[in-house]
Structure formats: C-alpha cells, structure tokens
Image 1: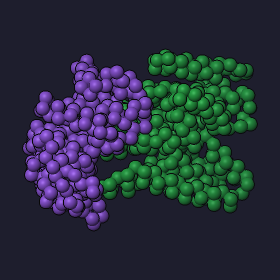
Image 2 (image 1 turned 180 degrees about the vertical axis):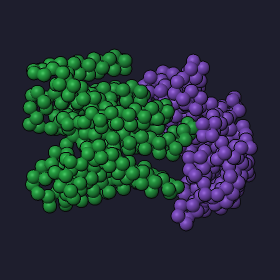
Image 3 (image 1 turned 60 degrees about the vertical axis):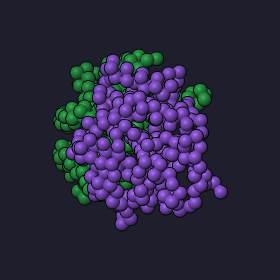
Length: 316
Length: 252
C-alpha cells in the first residue's frame, strides 16, 4: 500500500465511524440528540488531533518512541488543580463556579507551569532535553502525591467528583468552551505549520539537524511551547487524555512506515479519530457507560499494536 | 580558508580546548591527531557550530560563524560525527537526500535529485540505494553517510573519525575517496583520525593536539617525526620510509 492509499483508508474509516456515531440509534428528539452528538464529535476531533500531533512531534524532538508529553507533568498538574479546587471549596461550590473559569484557570496554570519549566531549563547553555523530561517527571510525581494526599482526606462523596475527572470524558463538554478551545488550537496550529518542514530533519538527531542548517534551539523551544499549549487546552477541555498519544503515535509509525512527517502526522491524527470515535461508540452503545474510554482505547489499540509487532518480527 | 583564533572550551573548570589558533588551508586534507581526550572532536565540533565555544573566533572565508545564518553555513561546511545513531527507518537514497535540506527545505527539485544521484554514484552505492540503513554493513553505512555529506555540496567537509570500526580495505577505500574529492573537486577536508599511518599517507597538513592544546601544526613531513610524535603520544616511534610514505612502527 502506498502512503496515499493508507491515508485514504484511514479517512474512509473515520468517515464511516463519524456517520455511524451521528446517525444510528436515534430515538426520540432528533434535533436535540444530534446537536449533543455533534458537540461530542467536535470535542473528539479537536482533542484527538491535538494529542496525536503533539505526541508525534514530541517523540521526534526527543528521538524516543516511548515518551509522550504526559512526562512533562501537565496532566498531573491538571489533576492537582481539580483536586485542590474540590478540596478547598467543595464540589457544590465548584459546580456553581463557572465552568469557563475552571477551564481558563487550568489552561493558564498549565501553560504557566510549562513556561516556567522551559525557562529554567533553557537558561543554561548546555541544554539537554532529557534534563527537562527528568524535571517534568519529578515535579509530575510531586503533583500526583499532593493530589493523592488531598484525595484521601476528602469526603467519599466529594472524592467521587474527583474520580470523575481522572478520566477523559466527552460526555459533558460545554459548547462555549469548545469554541474557545477551537480558536486556541487553530491559532497554535497555524503557528506550528511554520515549523513542520524541520521535523523530518529533527528525527535525525541534534547534530545532523544543526549540520543541515536548522536553528536547533530556536525550533525546539517553539515546538515545545506548541506541544504545551495543545496538551493544556485538550486536557482542560476533556480531562487527562495524553494516554491516547503513546498508542496513536506508535500505531501511526508502524502503519505508515515512513519518516516523512506530513504522512506520519496525518496518519496519527486519523488513527486517533478512529480510536476515539470507535471507543466512544463502544462505551456508549455496547457497554452503556459501564467502562471508560481510556480502557477501551488502550485495550483495543494495545492488541493491534502487539499484532503489528508480531507481524513485523516474522519478517526478520 | 578556516581561521581559528584563541578557541576555548571548558566543562566546569576543566578546559578541554585551550587557546587553539590555527589556519586550515583550502583544497587540502588536514588531519587532527592526538591521544584520547586531546580535544580533537570538541575542536572540530566547535568549527562546525555543533558545540558552543566559550571564547575565541572561527572565521570561514573571512566570516565569523556566529554572525552567519545557520542555513547559509550548512551550504559551506558539513560535518559527520563519529557515531551516527539514527533510530528511524531510512533507505540509503532517503538519507542522502537529506543532504539537500539546506537548499530545498525538504522539497527536492530535479536538480537536487541530480546531486543525490551523483553523490550515490560517487560513493559506489548505486546497487544498494534502496536498501534500509540497518541492513548495511559498517563500511557501507559510512559510505552512505559520506554520500549525504557530498550531496550537501559544501566546500568544507569535516569528518570525525571516519575510519572508526572499519577494516583495512574499507579504510583505504574511504581515504582514497577523500583524496579524490580534494584532487577532483577541490574540496577542503578536515579529519580527526587515530591511525597515525593513515594520517601520514593521505594528509597534506597535520595538526597535533594534546590535553586541549595545540602541540604543533605543519606539513605531514614536519609532524611525522619521532620527536614530535613522542611529545604528543608520550611513546617512542620508529619511522621508516616505505615507497615514499613515512610509516610509523610503534607496536613493540
């Protein structure tokens, strides 16, 4: 299969899933159900694309196929913010608190945190991206411990609310936030387009990239900022979702079998649509909400990934 | 011409390259020799802006490199480091085509592909250009990397230990190719090399370094001398003239 065929197959599959998701199993009030589903679908497409893009880029920058942006500690920070809000103000007040406020607060804090992290790191001359990851990992663990600490002190009923937010969910996305997020993500994507041409060369590693005339430090900094914004907006919109990235990026690598990033990224984005919409269909229509999306996506995707690896190992 | 002026690089308080000033002549092969830890790789990395220097200046054809655009430098000088670990699946031809990035930003024109094909032909890789890099032997891989540097079409080429892990036959093959590049195309080549006899047989100029400092530079004849080599390596060399080449015997 050529790259274009593969992309067409994925596009076709996504289109079918979208149609199934929108138009099957409708009973009762047509227009209401449809508008709810369109909102959900928009959230899926937005976050799926952002996570797929940022993970592929992140793996290219780090030259490492098992890392995802979650190592920067952004989703741990999100959980800490949510836990703290409930811990400090109680879930009743929180529901009263404007959802938009919560969203803006989370996005703002996450981006500020990433900015601080980068600033600390890029101050020195010998910048090492693995040092950034190490600090992100350590601080992320600290955030998690703080969250756990507050969670065990919570009233069980309040804890249920926290638990709800630990998993990505597309079921109660609000329209206004969706629009804000789309504008934010569209703007950052537009900015990111400028740097796409460097990605292929960056995958050769730092020395080769510098040798071939890439202004390495400048480009890496910009790409890291783009990743932080994308992950922050997606996480604040639907909850911790970086789990999707590892799987989607690796399946895209195995499926597309190319180093060319415009195919790789397009493939990853489409695969994440298939995984999220397919997973959401299963969660809603088969399991009737008795399980979470991340469980389904990781299970099905994991099995497919193992299949790809086994198939590959036979060739040797 | 490449001019280095008072280059200094420190890691912590320890200088790895200290006060090195020298000129690298155009259209010649210049070899950097010296024991492990002499700062050879650091020095050539600084020339090619892979490592930032703490003090000093590097002029390439009269232009200070920190005042040049990185992309313009990539059309003037190319470096190949000693270990090239690439963890993506690449065919030989795809690797070589990366050499055109400074010119085409990834959208190769017909002319770019001609450079790629010429580089592949020059390194004798035509029959394996569609193979994956990880399927190649060490010598073939090294030739593929050099082909990429050739496709970059720069006047100056720096090779950091190009003979690393190669057997005698492949080493000779590569050194002959480098000689040919200088003679046929007028390239300027800088190599970091450990095998003193290869340096003696193939280079025009030799730069001897020790503990980050320049010990002596000069023509091959001037450097391949027992007294100079003893100062650099701290051991005795027996130098014989065989077929017009100075060969060092130091094995016992």
